[in-house]
Length: 509
Ligand code: CA
Image (cartoon, rainbow, N blue to C red; front, side):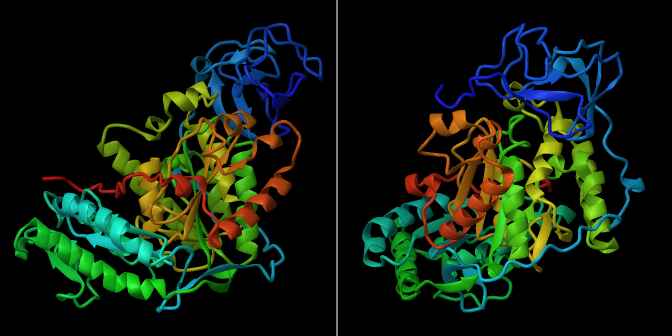
C-alpha cells in the first residue's frame, strides 16, 4: 500500500465532534496509540468512526459538528462505533426552519477565467459537439441503436469536428399515465434533454407512430416535418428506417462539423455536482475539495448545481439559512416536502438511501452521509432552486431537485442543462454520461491506485495531510476548465456511459 501513512492517523472534522475516522489503509489494530494518546479498544476499520470520549446510552454522536445519531448502549473511549451502535435521529422539522438568516457574504469575483467552447445559435454554449437524436418512445431504441452504429462507423470519420452521436434512449413515452399530475416531470425532462446545449442547436426525432408521448409534446416549439422527424411506422421496412435516420443525421453532421471552439468566459458554464458510492472520506476530502471548486466557479460567475434530495434532507437546516432570500428558502422546503411525500407513498423514508457499500465504507446512516454530501455545495449563497428537470435559469449556486440515484440524478441534471458533471466517489464506480463529460473525483489514495484509468482526480492527499482542501479545490477548478475545453475524461476515453433513467414518479399503465 504505497500511499498509506506509516503512522496511525485519524481525522476529526469539527472541534465539537466526539468521533473521528481512521485514515490508514486496512484500519488500525486494537492497542494502537494515536498521537494524542488515545488507545484503541479494538480494531477500527479504515473510514470508520472511533469514539473520542466515553459515551453513555442515548448520548449524541457528533460528526461535522452535527448530531449524526445516538449511542444505543454505552461506548468506551477508543471503541469502534459501528453502524449497529447508532440510533438515527429524526429529520429536521420542515415547518420550523430558519430561512435566509445566514446568507454568506459574496466572495470577491474571479475575473479573467475562460475556456474553449462552442457558441450555439441561440447564444448558449457547449463543451462538446455532439449529434443528439431524440426519441419519443422506447420502442424505437433497437432501430435507432442500429442506425447510430452505422452513423458512427460510416459517417463520423468524415466529420472529425463532431465528438459523438448519441441516441437519447429512455424508458418513457408509452404505457404510461401521461395525464397524471406527476407525468409533468418525465415530460419536462425529456423536452429539455432534446435541447441539451451540447447538441449545438441541432435536433432530430425518431418516433414510432402510436405512442402517447407524441413528438409534438416532446418538442412543442419546433415545427416537425420530413426533415427532422422519422416515423418508423411510415417507413417501408427496416432498411428504409435506418436509411432515413442515417440521411437525416448526415445533414446535421455537415453543419456540426463546421463549428469551431472559441474563447468563452467561465460565467457561461453550467456544472453539475453529484456523488455516488460514497464512503466516510467523501465528506472529508473529495466533497469539500469539489465544494471549494464550486465556490471558485460561482466567484467566476458560473452556474453550479447540487442535487440529490435524500442526501440533502438531513442537512436542510444548514442550507435554508444560506438561501439568498425567503422565496429560495421556501422553494428548498417545497422540494423536501414533495420528496418526503413521494417516499411516504412508497412506504419508506430517506433512510432507504444508504447502501451496503456506504455502510462498509464507514457511513452509519443517511444523516452522516448527508453531512458529507452537502460539502459539495461549498459555501456560496443558494441563489435559486430548480424543480425536477427544470432548465437552469440563473447564475450562482442552485439546488436542482433530483433523486440521489446516480443513474437518475445524471439525466435529471442534464435536463437542467449542465455542460458537465463532477462526480465524487469513495468506493468507486465507473459511471459516465453520454451527453456530457463526467470528471470523477475519488476520496482516498487507495482508489486512485486501484483504478488509475477510471478516476480523473484524487482528493485522497487531503486525508493524509499531503495537500489542503484549497489546493485540491483549485486543481479541480482548473481541471473543469480543461475538460470544458475538450480534454477527455477517463469515462469519455473508454466510451463509458450509463442509461438515461429519466425520473418518472407517475404511474406506468
Ligand atoms: Ca448519487
